[in-house]
Amino acid sequence: MKKVKMKTNISVVIPSYKVSKYILDVIKDIPEFVNHIIIVDDKCPQNSGQIAKTSSDSKVIVCYNEKNLGVGGAVITGYKKALELNSDIVIKIDGDGQMDVNYMQKLIQPILDGKADYTKGNRFTDFKALRAMPKVRLFGNSGLSFLVKAASGYWNLMDPTNGYTAINKHALEELDLDNIAKRYFFESDMLINLNIENAVVVDVEIPAKYGDEESSLSITKTLVGFPPKLFKGLCKRIFLKYFIYDFNMLSLYLVVGLPMLFFGIVFGSIKWIEAIVSNIETSTGTIMLAVLPIILGTQFILQAIQIDMNNIPRKEK
Image (cartoon, rainbow, N blue to C red):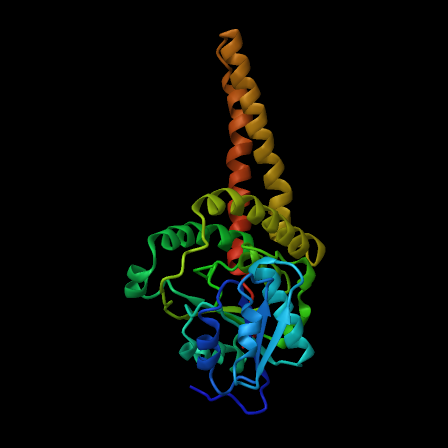
């Protein structure tokens, strides 16, 4: 594994909210190759920012949000500060000590090697780590993974809500940070926006640590809140990537397939209701007129999905 070059300017962003009893230990464990430790006090009622300032580490920089913006809002504040510091790579970890900083070098290695623009931890590659993961988190992350794959276009990734991430300066500058979700949808929305910018994202196997912290992942919030946001993100990505920035076979398949599928379902439903009400058997021709568009529309959409799966951003060899 290559060592970090001395000239590489690396910042770590740590959102801080109700982590007062962990923050100093997290700061103390940050590796020496990190140039700046950016603590973002997200209107913390425990004054985590003030506690962080008591650290003897001269690399610590404390930023304050005037109101609580959620983890995403805190990270975005940290990202903006890192750009002001001309950081080449920005790492994001939580302030509760759940993310093992000993894996920080491994996390940024694909970026240093020019193989990725953005890297994220993946806890789903180690069976022992999965057994240690709280069941609520395991269930929520497993259910989300497929939905985020479809919405973001990164079909090769797992563990979408993992907050142990790193991003290079170029990718960070390309993002419209003010239009990325501020709260619990932040990690997923980051992936959607990174795909729109054709950023290369790589999973890095990193087991999580779990202590006495309470999980903030709500099953209700996951099942009810995420799907509409992911669908909106999917529509945004498809529209921008395949209709504004480009127009290819995927675009054509969707233009033809979606109306056909919609027509078949609506027409078939109307004729089915009419047959029930009138008690008159529907003719074979009418049935075929409903079924064929559904079959063909579904085939076109599946072809579009296949093209999208093959269109994952990759570094040119």
